[in-house]
Amino acid sequence: MFGLFSVIKHKGVLKCEKRVSALFAAFKHYLGEESSNSTHIKEVHSCPDTCSKCSGPENDQCEECKAGWTLHNNTCVDVDECGTELGICPTNSYCFNTEGSFKCRGCDPACVGCMGSGPARCRKCASGYTLTGSKCLDIDECSDRVLACHGLDEICTNTEGSFRCDCAEGFIHRDGVCVKKQQPGVQGKGLFEDIQDDEVEVLQQMMFGVVLCALATLAAKGDLVYTSVFMGAVAAMAGYWLSDRGDRLLDSFLKGR
Image (cartoon, rainbow, N blue to C red; front, side, top):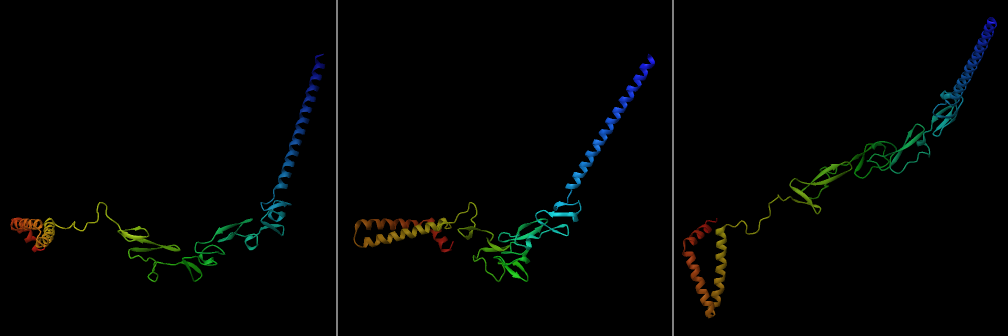
């Protein structure tokens, strides 16, 4: 009995091993097909960047090209849009070809319209520039041959394509002209601010003399009131001039102080 059990057990193990082997082989086969399919899909879609349809991964295996490229001997080559009506750019800019496309770049500041980069590709020179040889170059408005700044206190400074008028040192712009800069805390002097004290006294006496003359004229007409005022003014004037102060004032005035 034990011998029969052993045989049955042995046959069951063999059947189990066969089933496992069969399953493992089927799984390997499945993985192999998946890998093959993946490789096949990858190869079909591995076209060059310039191709939209191809028969292989090489550049000369293109069948159709992407926009900006054209097919030539099964190879996609770049289309130069700048040589066609496709490369139209705004005013004062030029067409610059790129791989599969183009860009519009601004002209040089010296140009009004251009055919390329730099002052040598201008169609026309901009204001402030002049054609020298084959290039549009800056005009030096501050040269001795051109009077750019008309003010006597202005200094001409040349800039690219233009110039500016700056005020000379010590001057500032005010209402479109250069005026002398006033130092802080310093104000213009009045008419009589430089007169010395003794000169002021002389002026006062001169005014007093004018008043005396007017009184004398009125007194000569016989007016007693004006005659009395005139006599008093003469006495006051005589007393002042006979004093020491009057002598000093007169001496200073005569010396031209």
